[in-house]
Image (cartoon, rainbow, N blue to C red; front, side, top):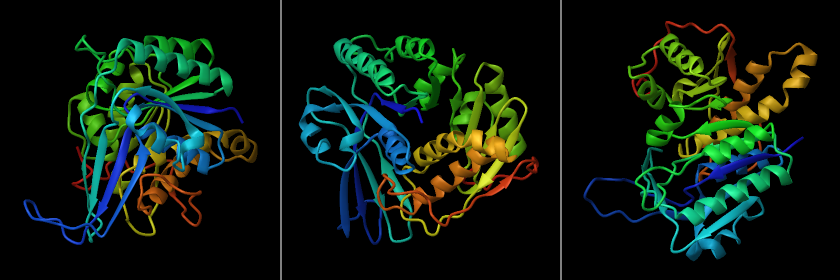
Length: 332
């Protein structure tokens, strides 16, 4: 199996606190605390590796935290671009009811030299592992002194020249910039809120999600996998829409579920040739895998998953009921 490379231009340290009760403005002492190198692409690569894929994670980290990164569980996966100072810290606070309150630090700008090094390392990694996919995950930093986001043109062109497929999981200004020129994006994985923002209208049913995904597909994206939180997910192409949902054994931490679902979808795609040979539906196989890995992730206390989702099986509908309403917290 060829490799999968993830690119996280805004790496992070994930700090997770567990508390009994969280009240606004009140003191709380944590029952436990964990700290790990993260960023969405690192999470995706960790899940891919847990599923047996050859994965690596290009990630920008502050020099102050590189020693810590090289001692962590993900160290073998990391291809680090070192920049001065500390890495931003993203904080999750999980209360006794399992609710996660998350505060992400702002994304610091990158110097032109650091971005050039990031692009060079990414393209070199695509060559090293004969990659089949490049996954762009997380927020994009501004290029220092320009007020504009870093330019992905060289990364996208380099992937295309190598025949590497391109997956995107980002939001906000970065997603808007990519959707202004989406040709060549093979896989886009927004949540319902991000998809609604992309098409400029609220989404309240599965059918409205499918319509919104097809609008994005009409701009040049091949496949949209829309995460619907507790409602499951929809994998949509120009011709097909497949719904999948898996039940988590329990909810420990919702942070990182989307990253694991993206990894699960890619892992499912690697089984597509076997699925075809056996008469199974490759898109349904990939959607089921995404739902199972997402459910697996929320049962983990950390944002990094360990091992595959044993014992979790997704419900898959290849002809979903399009008038089915989303639950209020998942509607956008």
